[in-house]
Length: 531
Image (cartoon, rainbow, N blue to C red; front, side, top):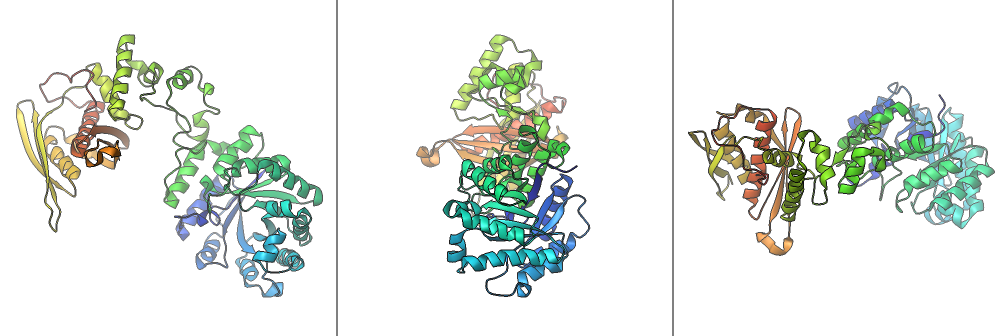
């Protein structure tokens, strides 16, 4: 099926110009194969004349793509030399790729001041370079660099550059908002003018310096562009490129256009996060459609509405992009937030009111349950007297010896029924040592604890004005056979806050796995804090 809009991905070239990204050859191959599976039409693999890794990538990709066309990137020939002598163009021809993407200046200012050549020579550079590659059997995509700035300053010359590319046989002319500062109305005007001036397929290449790359890309399509260039997650130099992860579903769902493989939109979140992982960058939690916050509701009014009609505050269903809905319980929460999570518990109205107030009191002390669902669940279940007291901590102690080894030592005394266990743990830090000692003390009664793994640990100072006496919030993420356990503790003593979060993780594990209680004490105190 011929798409209404062709998706052109430049993550492997323009995306790698973002600060902090450096992709290996294997990384680039993984991303390219993933993009191919999602129906991306063009994959720009890199600039072969700039580094050996990009050249190796093109050789490694021969015959591996099922749908996408592989494009090699380069510039028009250098000024004042014969086109056949240009090493950059020769490097593209030698790759035997189907598509070449050339960039050239579409601005009088850029030609005269940056290239330091004449406007006439710049036109010849564009036309001759395109023709050289077309004569060697390549499909040519011409990126008209700085087109919109050039069009604003001198529309006749910007369009003359477009005409030169078409005269050279370019199959595509992609109009570039290279500085990322154009507004949508300027994009529409520039695309519409080019569409009237030449009979060639047009595309858009937008940067996000004014926060408008996605809007400008969609506006260009409205004006007649049929190719959108961008990157996964908007990676790119400075403020980034147009984000294909946002543009693609908007093209399909908001504008009713055919693009990519629409059925793969259900896996859009997977695509975004896998590329982020390969790039070794944390996912953007607030990214449209795929960010962790995209379908997260915190305000009580919102939560109440979403429980009845999700479309009240969600413009698409979460599962349409591989997402899940999150309803947060916090100081802003109302009864609906609790009911969303604990509707099956049949909480009496007065009990629910007490829980809401208790959460607000704890959050005023510094607790935060948005990412500590396990601590929240423990508190609710304890209020219903459904969490046994699996053990009792008589005392714990941690010490640090500052020497060449810097080993920390901790002692924990635990009671289970009438059995007392005193254990010593060593670790790289006091929290590590306490964790080791606690595990030693409990594993004889509850061996399941050995499969609990701490995977993340964060500390947040709650009020810096108190300096080293400030209260801190400790957040711990643990894993048990793939199940995530997230807990929180708050104290002016960082060890106590860490200890409380550790105890919550252990208690949640024992409760959630329905481990038989071996302690004789009665059920936990109702409505106790999470520790």
